Image (cartoon, rainbow, N blue to C red):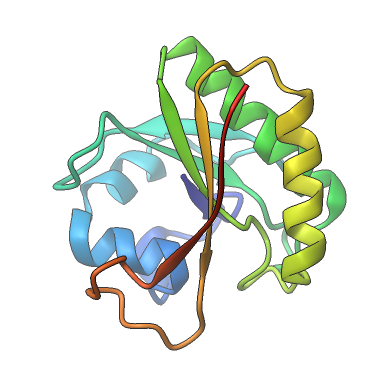
Length: 155
């Protein structure tokens, strides 16, 4: 899962940060080239791209932040909902979410996590869901990609 903007700024103009930066470093640029061909995303929208060089079936990108680079409860809820609908349609057995809108989006991590957990509980996704919290300044090439699993849940 990649928390993204609404796709109105060309990907190559953006500095790689957080999850997007890790995807670019490890997966290459192809997922972002493919994403740019999807057009402008509605707030909370979700689209699927190929995984690039990553060992996954695909990457779901969500428009978790708006024009002013800020997340909201609405954008977080819609992002989680639409990503899980897409994951169900694609028959994914598992998905991993960063805390949508807690990095560049400016949301408080604990609040974002609570909103996401509530929306995951409401979903009909039957697979495993993993929330991942990235620590500021962590080394992306470390043993756990700089992440800490928050919890894993099977609905």
